[in-house]
Image (cartoon, rainbow over all chains, first blue to last red; front, top):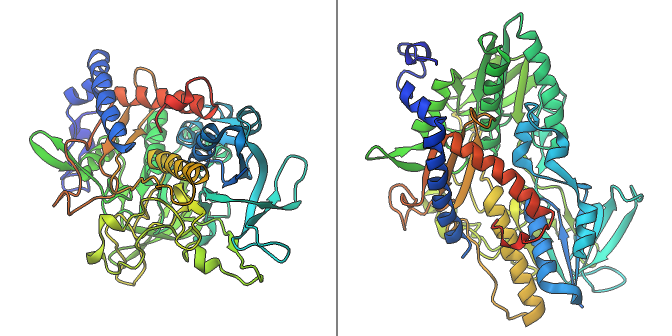
Length: 54
Length: 483
């Protein structure tokens, strides 16, 4: 997995941005966690879709 | 019997026509005029552009679907509108020119009682010198995406032995659809990793956004870690993580073979070399003309200078400081001809959503407002509802409303395809057009505006692909699937 030190260069364009840590990147494709997020995101989106259909 | 003519069979036009026919039944006619024989689920063109889907997976023929629905399908392009009739009759009509059905090149007049303009955009490659000369590719249509993939594969092949440079973004200072370019660059990066050629690829972003994550809607804010964080942080984070540098506030002024020239907001100019470039073209109206009964040109009455149709928006708000959410249209009815509506990209927005910017040389460099996806479908359905009520209840029927300043949008931007290793940014924004009176400061409701990157987003994107194609094919229960 790519490390932050390999991504960010001192005072380069991306020096002041947020860069995800290894844990965050792992969780993005962790099947159990993403299944839970899948349910949560769907619920949130359905609420917004319902609000938008007048 | 009344006749509704829908010009355009894309997301908005198809939605409007199919719902209208469903509600009107056999008592009234619905005619669809569209130059394409196939319907295209445009969001999945991104995956065609990196070879992860075939063209056949993102398109289907329209004729059998319209035949099943009882819709009169004309594979033709609309050429002109005659809202006061012509020499022979006072009856309103449009002229069309066939592009298929064995009548290619033939013209015809189609009378109407109600007209919905859902023609979508003209891909205005000609606005940037060189952009239409084959030096770059696009993913705006399924065929474009097929071509883009072929060119991309050549670059991947070369990258096995030598350094290659890829440039992705917008091809003009007034482009919209940054989201498509955003998806494409991250899908390329994802595929390059899978192909083992990432180390030999320099991938760079160029865009007319004044900050990363603007997306033509002025960016958005989301709750994160106890803060209301700007989409700029999330976008910059993703570009940094994937090792993609960026050029923003850029108007691509000229494209040559292997080189793009650009001007920045600070007035400076530069050039970027590339071996492969996907630059989104700016959009314009499709060039419909309008004529009065005596043949005089009244195009300026019906259309804005950019070729999009005027609707019930406030077009005279003037300076940015005067802009309000209430400037945005609600019913999409043409102010001059009450039996004409526009939906999807075809309606003229009152002004930008992002803050207007221009370079010190006076060159406008800002994203134009997106009207695609969920808002496009919702607007199409509401316009169809209004027309059906006008037909069934009479001219005093209440028109249905769907202001982009009062509706939200759910958006899923792919950052790489894969059942277990794919990712996408799943986000909602509410409302689409920020309302700084109702939500001072951020312009949007933080409870309904959110976003996160992960595999779940990819699953949702993939499900939406099948769901919306199912719906567009009018399969059983299609009316239950929201836009």
